[in-house]
Amino acid sequence: MKLLAIVLGFVVAAAGAVGVIAPSVLLNLADSLLIPEVVYIAAAVRVLYGALLAWLAPISRAPRTLRVIGVLLVLAGVLTAFIGLEHSRAMLDWLVAQNSWVTRVWAGVPLLLGLFIAHALTGPHRFAS
Image 1 (cartoon, helix red, strand yellow):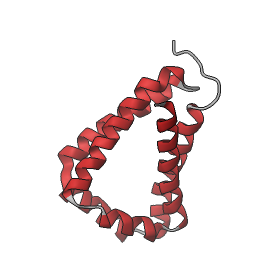
Image 2 (tube, one colour; image 1 turned 90 degrees about the horizontal axis):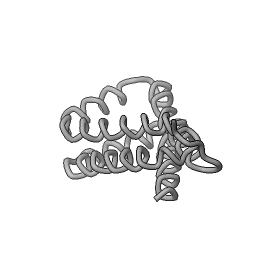
Image 3 (cartoon, one colour; image 1 turned 180 degrees about the vertical axis):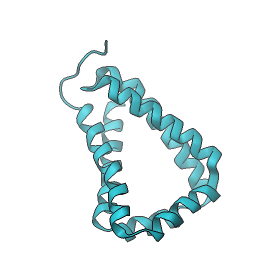
Image 4 (cartoon, helix red, strand yellow; image 1 turned 30 degrees about the vertical axis):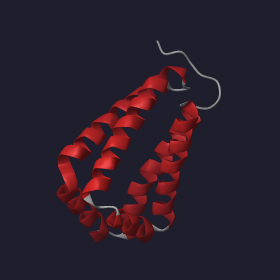
C-alpha cells in the first residue's frame, strides 16, 4: 500500500510537471476527461487516495502534514462528487481563459504536493504524537 501511495504521488507530480512545462497539453487532457463517469471516478480516486494517505501518515516522515493532506483529499473527493460536471467545466473554462502563467502556477501545486507525498513516505519515519 505504501508503494502504491508513493507511485500515485509521482503520478500527481508528473501531471503537475506537464502543466508547468506545457499548460495547453494539461488543459486539453482535462477537457477530454470532463465526462460524468470520469468526474465521478476522479472523485472516488481522491477519496481513496486521501484515506490511504491518512492511514499511512503515522509511518511517514511528516505524519501530521500527511494526515491533513489525506483528509483534505477525502473532502475534495466528496466535494467533486457533489459539485459535478457543470462546475468542473466552469472551473476549467476559467483556467483556459487565464494567461498560461496562471495555469503553470496552479500546476505547480500538484507538482510540489506529489513530490512531498513521495518524500514523506520514503526513508525513515517519525512516530505521530
